[in-house]
Amino acid sequence: MGEWEQMASALASLGEDASVLSDQETALVMAEGHHLLGLREVPGLHIQARESEEGVQARIEVAEGVRIQRPVHLCFGLLRRYGGQRILLDVQVGKGAEVTFMAHCLFMFAEMAEHRMEASMVLEEGARVSYHEGHYHGPFGGIEVLPKARIRVGKGARFENTFSLTSGRVGKLVLDVQVEVEEKGVAELISKVFGHGADTVMIREKAILSGKGARGLVKSRV
Image 1 (tube, rainbow, N blue to C red):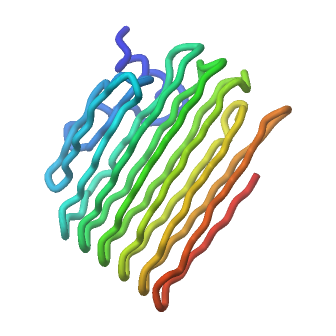
Image 2: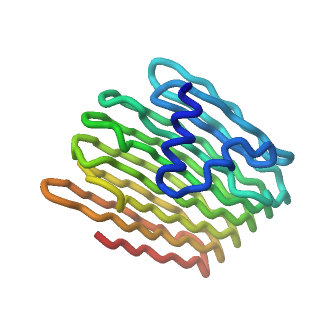
């Protein structure tokens, strides 16, 4: 069984619909460790991605005024017991565009590992973005998860973000998210993490309301 099939099988084992990974009408970026397994574009959404020894870099652009009908799936993880993964993600969403992202982070097999995500996102005026990230870990507790994101929400735009790590041992989590919200923009940051035993959880989520009429909600449950 190849890495693609193993990642799909891991996702299916969690009760998720793995068929979306093969759906030709669904945009996708999939990576195991620093190996880019595949990407798929749809009309109005362009992806540039490459792999290197230092990690996987991906840039996603959604054209102005485009509404992406189906969620974009980002499937990252490790199939090995030991290793690391670094993802550099740059997302640009054009004026008035709408898109939903579903990020599946699969680390059920990792005993000693590191997952590092460095993301930047820009929402132009009136754009709508929902970003849902779910982490799935095993019982080992030896993984470090270090996601960092910087987001700019333009005039009248709306950004919704959820982060969930409720399956398996957390290990060490340092979640660092900062959103700047411009005039009449809205940002919602919601995180839910279940820690066990010697797990370490650090959450730093910040909404900067820099424009008139900007609104923000930050809610964490640990």
